[in-house]
Every structure is written in C-alpha cells, then in structure tokens.
Length: 246
Image 1 (cartoon, rainbow, N blue to C red):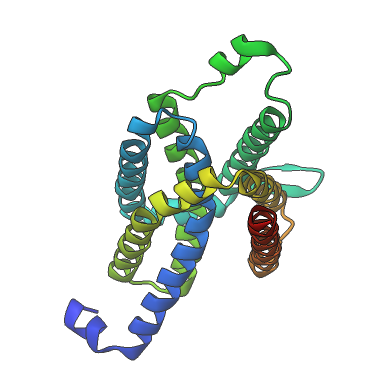
Image 2: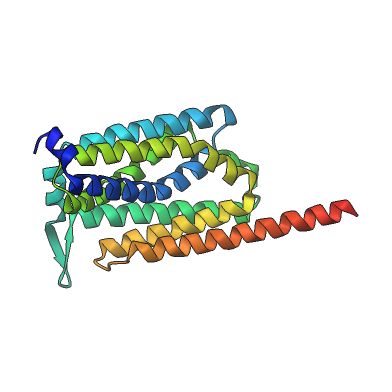
C-alpha cells in the first residue's frame, strides 16, 4: 500500500495512534532511567547528555526498523534448558533485566548509605558523560527490540512504525528535562523511581524466562505508587507550611 492509501485507510490511523501510545508508555521506563542517570552528571552536562542520548536512541531505533525482518527472526529458539526454549530476544531481555536490577540495586544502596565507603567510593561512583550515553543506548536497545517485535504484530506497514517511533521520541525529548528536574528536587521520588526500575528489570527477566507479565498490571502498580507519593508530598508541604505559619 502506498502513502496515499495509508493516509486514506482508517485502520492505518488506528494502528498509528495505538503504536504511538504504546511507544510513549514504554518510553516512561527509559525516561526514568535517563533522568536518574543524567542527574549524576555535572549540572552543565545534563541537558546535553539527555538530548544526545535520546537523539542517538532515535537513530538506533530507526536503523533497527530497517532490519525488522531480521529482528522478527530473533524470536526463534536458539537452545533449550530443561525443555524451555531460549531465543536471542529472550537472552537480550534477560541481559537487559539483569543490568537494570544491578543498576537499580547499586543506586538504592548508594542512596540509603552514601557514606558507608567514604569519599573515595563517592568519587568513583560519579557517572561520566560517555558512560551515561552508553548506558542510555544499551537499555534503549533492549526496549527497542521488544517494542519493534510487538509493533510488527500490530501493523505490517513500516511507514506507520517510523512515524510512531519519531512521535514517541519527540515526546521523550520534551519530557526529559521536566521529569529529571522534578526527580532531582524531590529526593523521595528518586527511591520510588529506582524501585520502578527494579520492578521493570525483574519483569524483563521473567519475560525472557518465558513468564508473561501483563504490562497493564506493571503500569497500574507504578501509577498507584506514584499517586501515593504525590499525596505524601502534598501532606508534607502542608505540614511544612502550617509549621512555618506559627
């Protein structure tokens, strides 16, 4: 079907809207990770790191879409363990999940007891610009392969996939700085965001092991936890204002 035919096809528009929403929702995971990671950089480098990281992630996603036929083949089992088949997609999800669990656990430990190993440990834990970009791209690769395989099952049209990816990454670019600034100004949000990353990493490992976890449950739990934290923030602010008024 040509471009004119796609524009005139109502089904194509439904597929496009659905894909954009899916990409934006999946992008929340990336944004949380990017926010926490880039906030460890010097303030003057944070905005640049976010833009470069997300920009390179867009280029990588578009390049991966060009190899969509090869990516679909990644779902074919490569070997079996105790009767459970593992494909390249499964191994990528497990690897990405382990990375997220390790990173989130490390950051939680550092936030809970940053002084445990002294100033030398804190200096060594500082994230460099290059490593931040590398980690952003590494995690985006994991989510991209998963989302592309899902997208192929929703529409056969590459043009729709390209537009959906570009639209979702544009939303990420717009939302990156406000989200990162909000997380930095509210320390309690950092721990909640790290808990989200830990849960997402565990979910990726489960998916790679062949255990399907409905994403609706994951995002519903994240939304509920975020709502509770917002209520806690409102309560803290009101108590602070009340005590300051006396």
